[in-house]
Image (cartoon, rainbow, N blue to C red; front, side):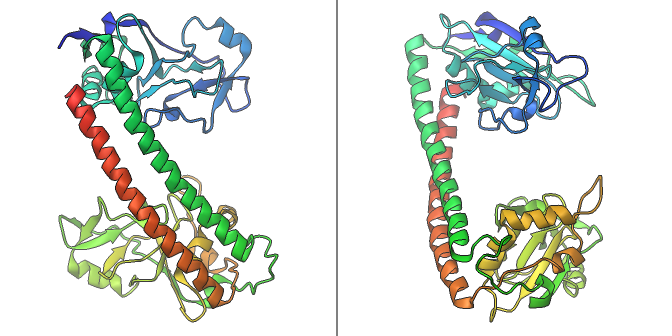
Length: 392
């Protein structure tokens, strides 16, 4: 296997700039890509884009994005993150800002997508970060390219490797889209069965959440002493999607848990709702074991004679409900919901039979989604194994 430095195979390595006075979402016509727009998947997102004027774009000597460019974050918390500009990039004209490197590869020497895959591998990221310097706001210099040793088979073999990785990557993306479509299906099913809660066109009873639930409280307001094992301790960070993520969970002692349990005793079937951090995400407790909670979570206990847990969870996660949260949050640096605001949330109350019918659909969809997630994990493991095989 031949190896070459990145310096020997690029035609351009440059960073961008921004005009004096900065940029905003309305300050021009040409999008400018920063570190926040590079995804962990090697793609580029268009969320909260900022823009520069056409004249400034034309005056830029460096930083114009072209198809098959490799973008690399050059400083800050996400230094070394890599993305590839493929044919799906929606902008004919775009630029990078001063926090991103643009790397253009000499196509006579290497396939740009092959080099991107290498730089995205564990070894590639390690070599990029070998140039990292600085403390408070560290980063990499242009000289990082001298430290990158790219394994470089002939062009035909590079194409073969890219084709295989592209194929597996497309399977992964398709599966992710399928999972998203299931979420969209449940959302549309909810609206079809119950209507938009904000408008309440079906004229359901509309009590306050605190008047129909038996208990609404929150977790401990004191940071506990964490242990290597013991009783699981859940915070808002562990609520992902509409589930509790038990990975990277923290633990507290059984004695401390016993003291906290008097205030907040989450049980299977209860609802937990984030009240700080990522505000307004609800999850259904679907485990039998005991655990404790931090104050960033509210605990909602309801009467199963009048409410179904799946219905309540998904109602609390509806966009219209989130508008209520956004109008109720307090604080500036740390925004949070108070229990009093959660208790006064209006709640539509369709007949329990209809709620149960919806819950049956949810269970079927979530069973399918779980199988899809397991398949997605297998695909991801396959992709990672191929990356390891090709790039070490």
